[in-house]
Image (tube, rainbow, N blue to C red; front, side, top):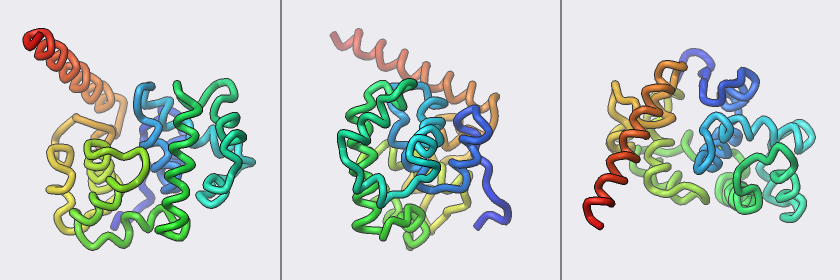
Length: 199
């Protein structure tokens, strides 16, 4: 376990990063929203959501919210995501699972996982987490938050390797963010090239 409070630097906003560092639900929501928008916006949105929810993030409250009202909260300018309606529904689904399976305690997803394999299984079963995102989140937990059940590196796959700049798990500074962005751009270019060659 870490000896000091972790300090994530994913949003480019101090207050938002502090929330991500101390509130497991905020971190999970940020991960869910991290698709098809700049990652800084995705990880800033939990703080905006908290402010729009009356100053607190509570899984049970979000799970029980009126779906139309929650979509309105997400859509209010500036919208919390490029697709506020579908993402509001996904976040609500996430919170329902957290309430039903973990008593509303988000950190229980990983704090009680006995092995890396079980941790990956739990994260992958959450709404909004496919296989790749689940592995990235396991890597983030291990590399930056000290959550390292036996086998976590193997469960995270390539994202768990040290010295990489592949995902949010590796972002600890502006410099590492630049390296991660470069890696993602190279991956996209390679995918386009491969697609063109195959066509």
